[in-house]
Image (cartoon, rainbow, N blue to C red; front, top):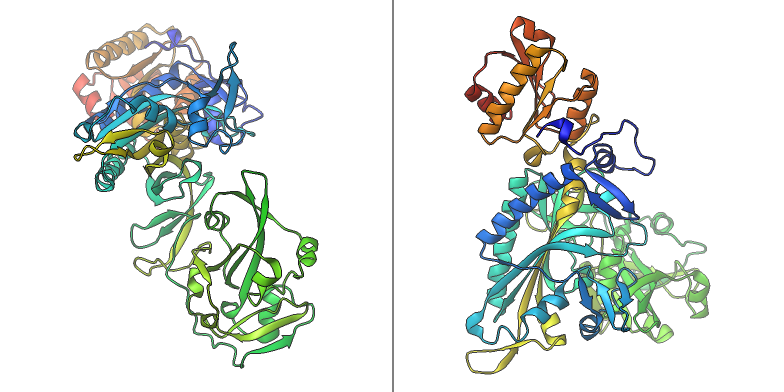
Length: 575
């Protein structure tokens, strides 16, 4: 490709709405162009990189035995109504009616559509298992699209769905897809982690996310400093916390604690470690029918409540919202003085949960459900019917539940997610097959997604520097040949010779034949993230040319009569 023929026009100034460097470089380098809020065109350079990503994904998915298809971008709303997601998914689901007033949705995900596709076509267990995938457009009506293609409304996704006759076969495919994704991201050349994750709005279990590590990531990832344990902070686990500090020495009694509301104040008042304090967090659960219910969560004073774990503890809840002190007081409770004694009778609350690490806990201090009073010497073993859940949010320095090493928290950008769906969708859409006994059974399903378009932004967040893009294994071109002075016949002649040699060798090469100053050409090389640059300039009179590696900008001086094989060797050598 000659640069003079390439539809690419770099910008010097940073667009005003660019917060992240990936967004800035993609716009400035004319990889993408915004056409609406959260909607982008992929220009030729962006399409080149996108195609390289898709090629890797397709090769690995095909190798795994999956079949590629293409589902409609528009899905009949009836299918979403059957799965009970039409209203539950929220306002991110774009709904519309056609001219005949039939309701449709723009698919943000395609569980319903794939079940409808398979239903009636696969009739017997002998036709299972099957894994079907597509690489296609999706639309999610984000309220605040931001960060360019990292959180866009329209995006390209690889989604695949597997169908099985048993959970054990689903487990096999799930492991195969995990390894397939590892192969894909290794080929993309990114630093990533496979982390345990929450299933979110899709539902199911056995959820794992694939995260590119980057300081600008929106997700907090808990990683072990020793073993391979990694988890989204929303569901991370730790080794149960312990303390060598002595517990409060007192028989069960009620103490007057005037105006002592916070954990720190209570800890200082009784001169005890907050490990022995019982914290109560009150929330209101919001359900799809619009009703709210007050919920109470108990955990140690040294711990914090995980919003996701708390929400997952309440069946069918859509959200948890705060409750103010006035509403609590109307129920006979006081912020800072709430405890487990009599709270169910006081509030008639259906949802009262204790953190798992409180099982068997004693020598505790908790609120007495009376203003300005706390109980000391509380033993939870004496309570009946307590419900325990994993509720706490893991912190830096907590210990790994697998190897006991210290845990750390880093930032990541989600680029892949795999789930075990079970019969969540096949049951609601009445999709069945006949088992070996001739009985109808619901399909057991798995779901496996990759955010194809957002990979471009994620890679730039991890790899790029202050001069521009660095793409690693998916750069738009392997090398750009820069002619310093387009009016110098010797420079042009040598550049064209090298260009032809590299084209004949099937190398992705760009010849910068534009009549621009040398500095502008170097600037574009750095901004666009082309892997290498061969610079033909003034040193040609001394029979010298230069090779520059984009990553690290390492310069190598070469003889002008260098052979094609020698150039190929240098281009393949990343160092």
